[in-house]
Amino acid sequence: MKPSDSFLPKHGNYQELKAFQKAEVVYDLTVRFARQYLGRGDRTVDQMVQAARSGKKNILEGSKAAKTSKEMEIKLTNVARASLEELLDDYLDYLRSRDLPIWPKDSREALYVRRLGTKQPQTFELYREIFETRPPEVVANLAICLINQANYLIDRQIARLEKDFLQQGGLRERMTRARLEHRAQQDGTHRSHGSSRTYESHSQNS
Image 1 (cartoon, one colour):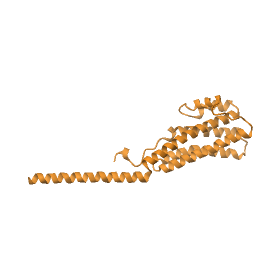
Image 2 (cartoon, helix red, strand yellow):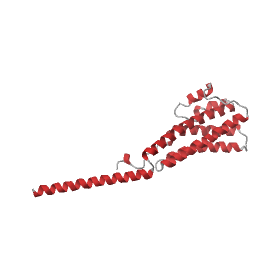
Image 3 (tube, one colour):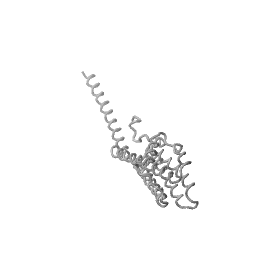
Image 4 (cartoon, one colour):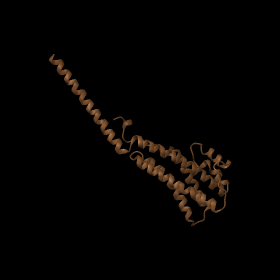
């Protein structure tokens, strides 16, 4: 069996996934935001950091699981999506409870963050100046924009994974397909050898 025909597909480098890069920026930003702007002992600190960490780590673990379980990859990627949605709500709560403005998605500020979001690779360094020089309401809105970008990328990733699963099946289906193809190859080889021996016998008799 050729390597390309293996029932264990190649899995990508999670660090190259745009969704992972974006989720990592969200995590780096959230750790700093919680440490600087939320009170010590505030339960929201742990909740936000844990949600950000879950968003990042579940994309990583899903990518690692892809080699043996497409179902697990889809499940973990969905967990990442849910965690970031929870984090998004925490940032919205932060702004709303303090009567601070929430940027409309087509505002000048949001569009600027969207342009920054197209740069590759995505790292916290792209946004460090904003974090270090702008007030907390700007940083919170920045985080909201980045989470929405990450969720968009994750939604696209999940759609592709589900399409691949429907077309290729899971590990069990791929193993069954590989066994059937292997048997077919063996049967074809046996028939070919049998035909050669029959031809040689006829040639000798004549």
